[in-house]
Image (cartoon, rainbow, N blue to C red; front, top):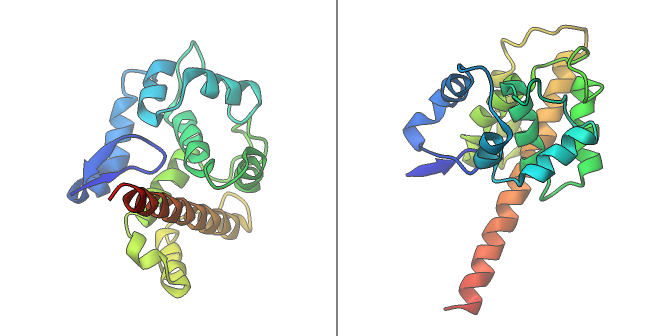
Length: 185
């Protein structure tokens, strides 16, 4: 069975979920990605991504090439935009990474945050119960090294909110699918 990688249009077999970080990193070996590639991965229109750069939601690409870190920021926003206004998403990401148009004050690299999130999302069935979610969050952040005191708690809170929003989006999609079935038996 295939699993859609959160925030993207990419699918992988369930058994390959653990290899997503390596697969993403390999895509950047040639020295970054151009806008059309980012658009193809996320399913977003190029002008949307450019708008997010202009609005300061992420650092601008260098020589028209995006980094893995920038892709993951775009994926975060894309993943959450169906259930949260852009301003709230930016506020959430700023909670752990300060100024969004600068990487200098980040508590966690966006790619690290995303790969932790993907690992947690892969265990979606265990995320619906709050106590299971807490245990998974603690386990996922066991090796996280705080760059400043309190960073681990901020990252955990950010991940908790991201997971809750992602689960809400999945529930909305499921209800829409069910409604479609009712209307088109």
